[in-house]
Amino acid sequence: MTSSPRFTRVLWFAVGALAVAGLLLLAYQIPPVKFRLEWRLDSFSGIVRGWIRPDQTLPTPASASVSSFLPLVLPTSAASSIAPGQTEIPPTPAPSPTALPASVSLPSPTWEKQDWNNCGPATLALSLRFHGWEGDQFVISDLLKPERGDKNVNIEELVFYVRTQAGWLNADFRVGGTIERLKSFIAAGFPVIVEKGFVLGEGDGGGGWAGHYLLLTGYDDAQQTFVSQDTNPGTGGPDRLISYEELDEGWREFNRVYMYLYLPRDESRIQSILGQDVDLDHNRAAALEAAQAEIESDPQSPYSWFNLGTNLVYFERYGEASQAFDNALALGLPWRFTRYQFGPYIAYFNQGRFQDVVDLAEATLFRTYKAEESLLWRGWAKFRLGDLNSAIVDWREALQYNPNYQDAQYALEYVGSTP
Image (cartoon, rainbow, N blue to C red; front, top):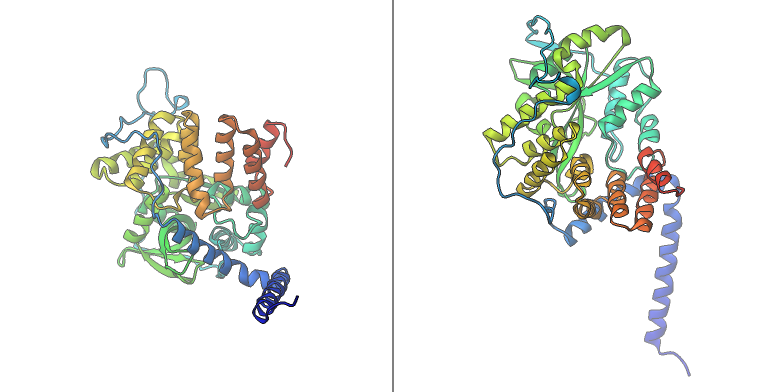
């Protein structure tokens, strides 16, 4: 019995297609080919995942309590910062205010274009280069995000890199910054790293809101602009001007966090710039109060509610933080938000809302599957729900994307497993 000509053609087509697919797969393993194609395939994957789940916001937790958007009662401060009977942080002497120059322009470090998902390491490289460092973004990302598809490096990780790999410099960060605070650093000769939100084009991973780092190296009051070093040429490039208003609008979405590098000999100058914000508890209490004031002014701002929750988590006030995050999610947070900030996981977990942690992490991981922080917290929630095997799978996957992720290593050690 002989095959029909049509069957033969189909068979040869299938064989040919498999052969081509095999050759393409082999070619993809060649490092230069993979380097050029990986981000394009990931971007296309993001677009397809957006077609499957087109929601532009994160889901509201099933057990969320969002009956009222009235502002919460403002907590005072961490107990360690106040004496018995006090209701607020005792004031510390503030330096005499010094008039800032109307404009300042610091030397621009040699600019480099960021690699895929690499704005954090690339921006830190520029800041380090300002202080005489001679490396590039890949020296940093090899430690902080060895997986190119890992789309986030936290500001704590950037500080960790400086403290452990460039020990001749100090680094730290604060939240609740102001335009004047940024100008004060720049006027004193210290560039500042900020993290802010912006909007991607439709062809870039599905478009929409995302986070981005900038290095600020100058300002001009007459133009109301900062000079920023933007490692993404699509959004700026070197010496890009950004208005005070535009920066603050996106900066608010990250609790107005800022990071600064300095030589140990400049410690007293840094303390003078920070004033009372030298004290971490005072800084967080001030940021919390600022978020509360913005909520009172605009109760429908999801970012202000999120910032309130983030600062409440710092003070371990998880019940109030959970309410704030419930409100933020109900008002609508962009689907990438928990790619960068993890306060809801911490608050819900400590309130025993384990299924809410799982649901929120899964919503994040569907669109951003190489997110080790979401894998970590989904694993912890599954562990508390009694699913140890799934928890171990999540923690091992987190280490697959970031073998240096100590929180996932600890989680596995805690349950007696191995990476």
